[in-house]
Every structure is written in structure tokens, then in C-alpha cells.
Image 1 (cartoon, rainbow, N blue to C red):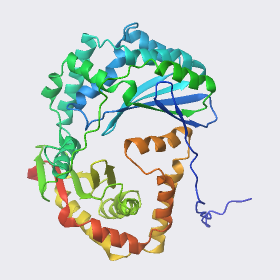
Image 2 (cartoon, one colour):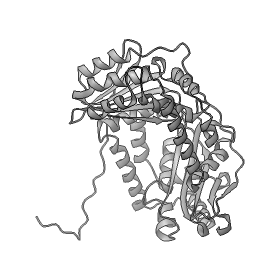
Image 3 (tube, helix red, strand yellow):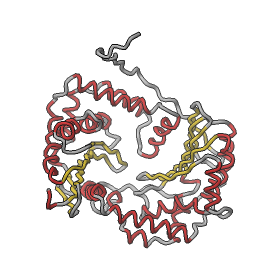
Image 4 (cartoon, rainbow, N blue to C red):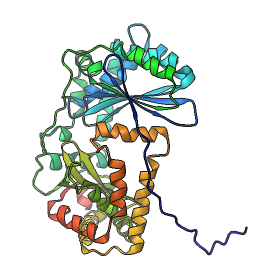
Length: 429
């Protein structure tokens, strides 16, 4: 059959999607184990989620060093031997961080899992934190901090964190390079014993899961120590600064970074999901209002985005972009215009359908693999998404209308509440 390229292919909307249930077990020592047993290949991903994230500790840099340096040597093996074990067996391990949790993520082949899991548990239970490796990694972290302080995107984000959360809030605290260099080996060891123990841990296992893998996890994770004083979350109320523009002058910078934000509703609010798609309509995908106007029509920037951040402490609607210094205030004016345009109930059917179809592809992408499905369940723990969020997202998309977008924009997106941070060459703006 010959393809007629003058006729657009038929667009078929998604039917109701269903996410597989997560199987739940409890190990002999009380650690919770969540399992998604799916996939075509004999691989697995084990996520260890520990209570204690960036907002729960006094020093985020200390937390990162405490986690990442566990691989630099244990009571029984050197860092080189640990690395060789993971590499030889086709596995890899990484650390990730959230506001109130820290994770270690192990990707492994099923047939080699019994070789890498003992090494993993050993490195978590008995790290020796070699002084030389500690000093090298601490200095690398301090150098990265110094480099970040020259980047306009980093500076605008840090300024905006202060305006949104308040200067004394954990979300707004930024360690200096000297703060990092002041971290001691004893700081690392103390934080390790506080966080990386059985009390604080929950496990998420995805892939082609066999009974043998489940047994190995039970046997080895029962070796983790139980802490006498498990860590608790530190939730600090947001106290935003008054709406204003903060300009961080970066002489001779080639571009200007702009970040704008409005404090808004938390995830627990009934309007949250609909507001999320309202902000997606504003700048959350390539066909959004901000991209169409500021990138496609005006040519002020290569990219601009908006997102609704659902932190434990509260929600924040955030917009970010970079542009030539000379376009700075023109971009800010256009962003304000597009926020106001959302309130005019002027979405036609074509634009609304484009938004809904994009949003549904994002929901459908959750079902791509056992790993992406497990990401959804991990988010229930890490960012407090509701247990029925998968169904809630679909219901919100199906019922989204121009009137609803206008209503929410009027209710939550006042341009008078914008906190605006700019980092760039002030003399060129």
C-alpha cells in the first residue's frame, strides 16, 4: 500500500491506563521491600531509600560525601576491589538525593546479583572512609562549588530559592566552598551512622525478579545495623520574601539567566493536579504558550520552561530561561503577558487537544518499563504523591478545559506575587 503523505495519520486518543500493583514484603528485620516483577530481560534495579535528605541535615555536602565515599573502601576490601567487583559483574551503583530522602541505586544482571550484593552491603555497613580519598573528593566538591558560582543559571536559581523559601530556610541554604573544605572525616562518619541503617531504609526492587533474588536481599539486608536514634524529617515552614526583583551582577557574562516563581498550593490541595497542567500549558512542553511566543515568535531564547514543584514544605510555580543580556526585561514582560493571557479563557480546541495528548504521553511513559513503573512508587515516598495519583492525573487531563485553566490561573498565578531573580551582566541589560 502506497503511503499518501498529503493525508495526516489518524490520531487515536489513549484509553484508560492502569498501573500494575506493587507487591509488598517485609524483611525479617522489618525493612519494607516493594517489588515490580516485569520486563523481558534478566536484569534488576534495587533502590535503597534512606530517611534523610538535603533539608534534614545541616550540611548537604557532608551527606553526599558520606554516601558516595562508601565505595572507596570497606573493612574487608579496598575501593579498587569494590569497583572491580561491580565492573566485572556488569553492575553499577549511583547515589541520588531528594529533599527528605537519600538513595543508592544498584543496576545488576540477575545471574551476577549474588556476587555484587554482598559487596554492596559490606560497603554500606563497614565503610572505612580512607583519608586520602576523602580529602580528594572533598576538594573536588569544593572546586565544583567554585565553578558553580561563575554560572548564571546557578546564581539565579540560588537567589530565587532565597526569595521563595526565605533566607533561613534549608531549601535556600547554599554551602560555600570553604564550608565544604571545613567538613571533617568525623562529620562523615557520624552522619553515616545516623542515616545508613535498617531503621531508615525502604527498598524498591524492579525487573525480572526471582525468589532467589528476594532471598538474597532478605539475608543480606538483615545484616544492616539498627540505629538507636533513627533520623526524623525536618519540615520547615516556607516564609517567602516580599515580591521583588533580585539582580545578581555577573560582569562579562555572555547570557542572562532568569528565574521567576510564585508560592502556591501543596500536593495535598484538591486543585494541585489541575494546576500542574495549567502550568504545563504555560511552559511545560514544546508547544506551550511561553515556547511559542518567546522562542518561536520573538526568538529571545532557545528554551524556556515552567513547572509546578510539589515540595513537602509547599508548592512553587517556577519559570526559568536564559537569554542575551539585552533581552532580559523584554523576556520578563512577555512572561508576565503570557501568565495574564492564561486567565482569558482563550484556548481553542486544537491547542487544548495538543496539551492533553502531550500530558497523556507523559502518563503513558510511566508504563514504559518496570523501572519507570517503580519510579512512580518511589515518588509516593519521596515527594508524597497520592497513592491514586496515576488515576488522578488521567481524570484531570480528560476534564481539563479552557475555563478550568483560566479559573486556576486567576486563582493562583498573580503576577504581583512573582519573585524574580536575574543573573547576568547588569551593564548590558
